[in-house]
Amino acid sequence: MHMLARVNDEALRSVVDLFHGARLTPTQRRIAHSLVEHAAKAAYLSAAEVADLAGVSQPSVTRFAMALGYSGYPALRRELRDLTGGEDEPGAADGNAMQLAVRAEVEHLGRLQEQLGRLDDVEEAARILMGSRPLPVLGLRAAAPLAGYFGYFAAKVHPDVRVLDVGGTPLLDRLDQARAAGGSALLAVVLPRYPRESLEAIREAKKSGYAIVAITDSVVSPVAELADVVLPAAVGTQLVFDLHTGPMAMAMVLLQAMCDAAPDLAQRRLEEFEQAAARRHLFMA
Image (cartoon, rainbow, N blue to C red; front, side, top):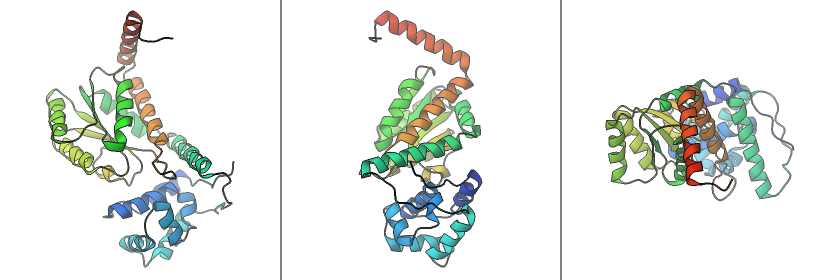
């Protein structure tokens, strides 16, 4: 399988640093995310190609470059080329659209594997979350299934997990109730198109004293500005609806780290669950 060369971690951080501190519109954040996600080839793409990659208009790419202080996109592209270094390997990708979408997910997981060579953020997030009783897990709209999936398994090793996957005014009430009961941390899953209600709930949670751990698609996601720990995992954008393979893998990595952070508690609760499952004949195998 032919893939574009990946940039190293230092070069990728340099690309990310270009966008830190800049006040970007949602459209500009989408462009920034695409440039980070495709850093290996972005420095060799035209403004029109970047626009296609990000799903925006070509003038939006030009305005994005100027918002960062460049004279236009060519100047930004030169900067990206200097930061990433090396030569691209452009060869046309083989396969149909479905294969290319899955291939892109393989590349995302490859970058996630490299990212997990440094576990400081994952381990810090695990300690924060495992110490929260109860532990609210927020995920609205596209993120709701992932919040529920994480919550289902997390409840097997954590004594009080509360999945918040429905919006509206009761959402803030449930956050207040969890805080009053002793909750100290919130796991927030925020995926494109970044529901406004999720961000508003996170802001309120932060004001009330919650530590925020966020699983999101990029370090330039709007939730990154609010979170104490950000765990990025790219989302696939080549099909009509996004692929969330990377965020799901990150969620399970985080859960493993939570088990490692409190091994006695995790083991005891798993044994209790297995005993209850056997007594109730829950499973066929």
